[in-house]
Length: 207
Image 1 (spheres, rainbow, N blue to C red):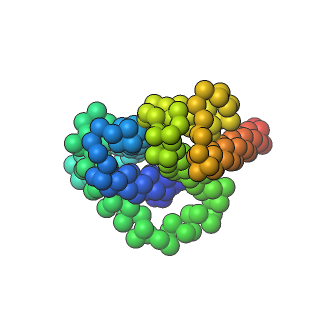
Image 2: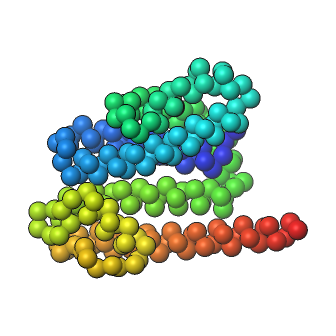
């Protein structure tokens, strides 16, 4: 059965494989490589949650675990970097969902609001990863954003529109990246408030 979480996990699986591919071209131990490793850790937490959820809802838990569950589990362990290459096998789950394209389209049509919020979460996370990596690449030699930790701190205060001001881009490209991240933050918080308002209205009407 297809759900919003299935769609989000499918998209994140594709994105994680893209990050994994990118890591092959980065110098080991570089600041950008360390940044990608951090985001990979966050993705592992998503995948670990998905594994626990799939195991819980499976009609036959042992069958799920011995077929694809053990691969999902191994690819979701963040502390063992070698196991992340097993994540390539997640592409088979993506193929399974895409194979049911008619059901996928039908689900999206019938659950437009929920699907939209799912895509908002994925889009916001994707933009956060891309802009954080891009600003570190552009600014590390000329600005004050020089390390993976600097870039992460800057992205968090920027997407939350707090604007702490201790770290900031000095190049025109970096400033454009900051604008994109600020707009993403405002849009995401607006969507989150809309989602909570809608859920509260549904709960109120159900009483």
